[in-house]
Length: 558
Image 1: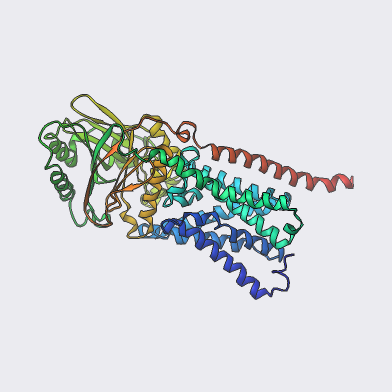
Image 2 (image 1 turned 90 degrees about the horizontal axis):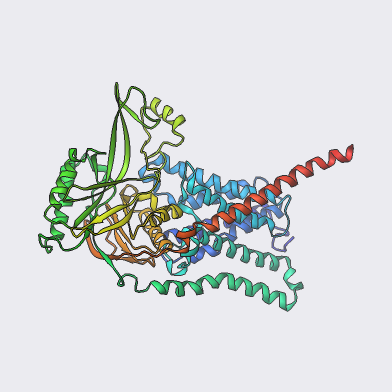
């Protein structure tokens, strides 16, 4: 047993364990809330591993309390802002996400009973990454704290995400933390003194290479996109941030008044544009700007009519905006579990949509698919929609598309530019986001409304994740947020012309149109798939060892 632990009183032992818990939570939270601190994540898990080792060596009972508390603190520090939108949902997100993390860690501790050496720690890393990958597609999904997202505000270090995606960052974090922890354990146990000089050099050089290697190659990879914003074909964009408080959206002003605000901003910005075709221009407005869109009957919307009339004077101008849209379905029986009953034979299905319009009345529409649980989506609708009906319909029931489709920017000369539009939460899902590029998107837009969270780290975290998507796909992004931060994001993840928070603003610029395909777009999340495969093999091995060890005594008795 290490000398540090010998003779330690129970009080000092508890202080040490809880101190390591807090240290872990702080070190892992800072990369998500403080710019340019992403590298802390490369060491931030070490305190948690030390806590578990000390607690195990001292035969501490109920160790799960310590690691569950560590995860609760981490989740609470980084995502407390969810409570600004929904207190119950925020508390549930923190506790439930922490529980899943704690279960992964508990499975690691269970594996230590049958695996020895470094194998339990390898099992921990691949189990964690397999869980992160599963979380991207789970019915109840909250992948906000994927470890690879820690570099969202330190993008200079992870330009290689174009090959691995964000789970490559998760693997790097685990490898560096486990490498450092292994060296510390060897020093603490005195084993390192028994190594010869070659073994010591190999150990420390290997760790240094693991830590510094990705940092060394990142600038070389990112340097290829240094001039990406100025080279090749470009699309002029106008990003309009109307700054409408969502909590007073319908109490303080009518939709017509909100339309007037956005129209005024657009008209002012278009003053220098002559009333004739001057090549394509894309205007981007935020998510859920209006709620009067009926799918297939767009001309019934006052918002749609107002903006199509505005654009008639500008033939090459296209406008993209978000809307709460609806399908009305006539049926004697419920057409789906998510449909709401309006009257005897009338049902309603809702969507969170993005619309592309122009002065010719052409309208493309895309329905958001990655929906926020409870607020927009009722999980397992066959069961929970019935419960929701009994509660009076308190949960969201938006319906998304089965697969991604693109929106076209069109001009009078017949030019069509396919672009993708990720609606809010969809920009958190790396592999899902690549489908826009595989479908042929030459540039990307993100529309969002982050005002629900108030002036907290939430909207800044969300912005930083857009930089990760830009690096993974090497597509520039025109990002429009209702109250900020709106920005243009380069293919290297650089945030350009960021708007202030909670102020009306308009950005004018150009985004490059690209056709190249990154390795991550072409092949998907190889890191996640490989780790999931290894996890399955190790889990099967663990189960076999438990089964065979339990059956051995009975065979001996026979």
